[in-house]
Image (tube, rainbow, N blue to C red; front, side, top):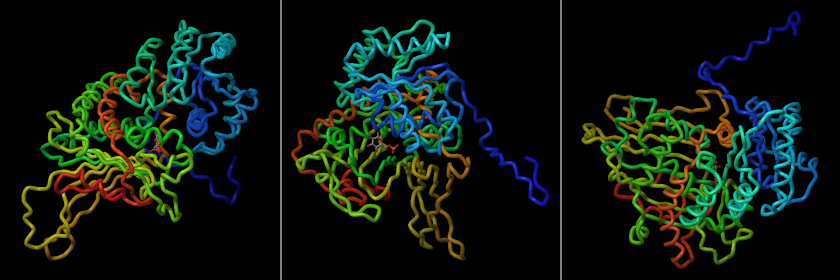
Length: 516
Ligand code: BG6
């Protein structure tokens, strides 16, 4: 529209030169089938992610979504539920046209997951889409159900010959938890790999889809200045924290059987450790990246019963105060037995026994109902060998520390020693900061947006390979087993606090936990 006389011409939106090069890779025509289509994950994460991909034009031109769930309901009812989930949880306010177009391609197949007729019906729906399209469409089966159904669904897909398709790719995406012990993970891998080839399997760890987790590899391997220091000669310790202010909420049924170690450390936090510790891959391909991560996991010694007492701490939150509100303790939460010995806080100290990392402690800690939500990796360098300024005094000279914050304020901060202005040589720590959001002026996509696209494109770099998942369990299984044998009650920490004082016992001399 032409500018009216006397009115300023609208300025074109400023280009952000830092995002030049942003592009969308094409995705082949695909039908995505979500098992557990009415569950919490589908509503809160998967459907909003699909909407946001549609919004950005990142879905394939021919895209269909089929929801499969136990509840009987009409297609229209399911579409209305999808719409409601998207309107409630999408990171963008939906554009009506985009939403309408997406919902037009949604179908629903009701039924219990071990019932053959569900799969014959599903087969008909998938074939129907292809007949209308006049071409074969890729198929991606997303298992977003309770984990006990994973083997059942995989077996049924095999029995009904849905695991392969002539002239099109078939993939299976499997949510966490991938087993609750090493043995279960092995069994599940056996079941899945009896039907699908490993190249068809995409095991989700949503942390790998976070922009900032991927940025860690860019940070390490696209900059020359850190890598020479990135080893036992210069690094004193590594601390990885994933703290949450929320409690167990409505998930007690799942969480009380899982606990903090299985819920976050076995998967997300060991992945973060791998990103810190891995060698540079020859190229950024699924196999090479995952080979390097597996090498790191294999270099972590399996904890022995004697180690476990010294290298692990667990605790439960007691009543306290979070975000200005009084909150209940874990044992008083709905659905939690009052004798529960499930940990809501876990901290462990690991070694990575290889040339690069020998002797460097890796501390990992996670917990619910802590002071605030933060996920960060802090790499502390060794102190300088001699402090020449000590005669003038200094305000707490501290070793350099590099902190990679993954959330909530994604960025990198480097602690340096600097001189306080004035006539004397007094040093104090200052921070040099880079904030992701400020630099790129863009909102990072949700992890699931990236992961769904990659799975549809067949790129498994950001998914956990079978040997990786087993290596993670090899580290966590002995701890889980040892804890299970220890009698309760567990150490407690006040909700809204920094966690249990017992966590300090893991720290080697001269080290301390960062404030949460
Ligand atoms: C999930 C856990 O995998 O990760 C949850 O099951 C946890 O208990 C969540 O709250 C944390 O994810 P994020 O992306 O919020 O850090």
